[in-house]
Amino acid sequence: MSRIIGRCVGETSLSEVSFISKEAPQMGEYVSLTYDEKNVLGMIESLFRGSVSINDEIYDPKAIEKIREIEGDDYYIRGKVKILGDINDNLRIPRTPAPPGTEVKAADSEILREIFKIEGTGLRLGNLISQDQVEVEVDINKMVSRHLAILAMTGAGKSNTVAVVVDGLLKYNGCVVIFDMHSEYTDIDFKNGKLEAVEAQINPLYMSCSEIKRLARIPENAYLQDRYFREACKIARKEANEANIRGRDFVKTMKTVLEGWSNEEKFRGQDLKTQDKKTIIDVLNKIEDLEERYNQILNLSTGNILSKLKLNSANVIDLGSVDESAAEVIVSHVLRNALEQRKNFIRKEDRDKKEILSHPVFFVLEEAHILAPKSRSPRSKYWISRIAREGRKFGLGIALVSQSPKSLDPDSLSQANNMIILRLVEPQDQRHVQTASENLSDDLVSQLPSLNIGEAVVLGLMTRIPTLVKIDDFGAGKSSGGDINIVGEWEKSEETKKRNIEDQKQEFMETGGDY
Ligand SMILES: Nc1ncnc2c1ncn2[C@@H]1O[C@H](COP(=O)(O)OP(=O)(O)O)[C@@H](O)[C@H]1O
Ligand SMILES: [Mg+2]
Image (cartoon, rainbow, N blue to C red):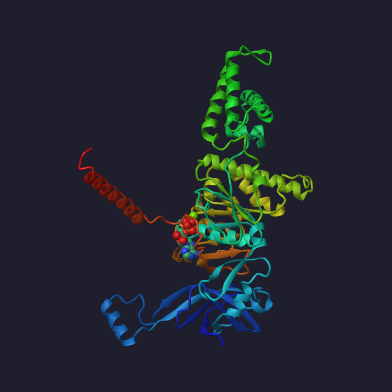
């Protein structure tokens, strides 16, 4: 017989009921209500503790003290239960509300285990916060094809969650690409697969002239600049194809070509007027800026990034040492090519080519609010939103990881049909997340600030019902993203200093002060 928590009071509805009880159940605890041959599952979404005798009309603390002396700890619990569905009817919402007075009972753990068990395609996230003997799995197929957002303030456990999710995908031979903005994942020890470090380099030969032109920030309608730029780009490309230049020489070659023209009298047989020379110098200046900003990622000696991705591996692209604009370029390059190649693969156009993405991929984007910001429009944002919209058809999924949901592109966020939200305090962030997800009720939102590290609200298509989960601690082989032990570090350096002084003293004694 399950523990009776309390009884329904007041008007009940199809979506929620209020109850009164004597003992406090836990927030997020699952309950069941039996009536009209139904066994209805619900989740406790809010709790208040009140006292009949000590109400807010007593203004004298002494009077309150007296009442407490007489009545003891006399209080009641009032709570709200969100109705999740009829257990006997595949979790469909019942058509009749529970009669007032209905018993609210703790849900049976066996039933909960069944609800959170996903046969064949399950990924273990952790255990229920309220009933920790119940394991929580989510459906991988739904998670990858309908995208995921992992949102929380810094230090709440996003990267740990990423590690748990990625390792869970590797168990099924998954192919995951992590855009690692802070070099957090480069030495992680996955239990179910390998870590493949992928260099953050693009071969300009795999980029179109227009793509490179965008990097040089030459405006779309600058036709004169476009003419010289394209010509120089073509020459550099030819040199690269003939293996006359390699490594970082692509941009340098373009510069040399343009410098040459700026000193000539004619270009393609036509006289170069002062205005033309000015245009060439303009392009040259832009190429110099491009060199400064992006030369660290443009490399003729590197292969196609996508052909390096391995199955059963977490392919980590370390973006820790490149600046934000370079990171945006790499992300958009990879996503664009992945989408194109997967389209061709599904449409059978390029099936036989060796260098083609022949399997689904899950992309993890750390710092998603930088790569797909609300207020700017870098190319990475464009391709992230394209994959968010179209990826499902082509087996490409994305996970947007962010500590600032309010600065994240709302379109992409609303395409994430699955969410893992850990502690989130800022009201603006909460509102933003709520706008993007219809499943997130006010009561669940009000829980977000009080979650502990690693505790999360899990919602969306990947789970049958929304739930509060204590995410597994990824533990031993963990990333280096956790907090630094500041005092420890200082002590260490103090120790080192002392040791150095001791060493010097020793030496001084030994040499008899004879330097
Ligand atoms: N589920 C968890 N269980 C136990 N400890 C956790 C859990 N999630 C995170 N932590 C700890 O909290 C710290 C911050 O976690 P991290 O994942 O780096 O947060 P974020 O990426 O959100 O900044 C780490 O030291 C980590 O070990
Ligand atoms: Mg992190």
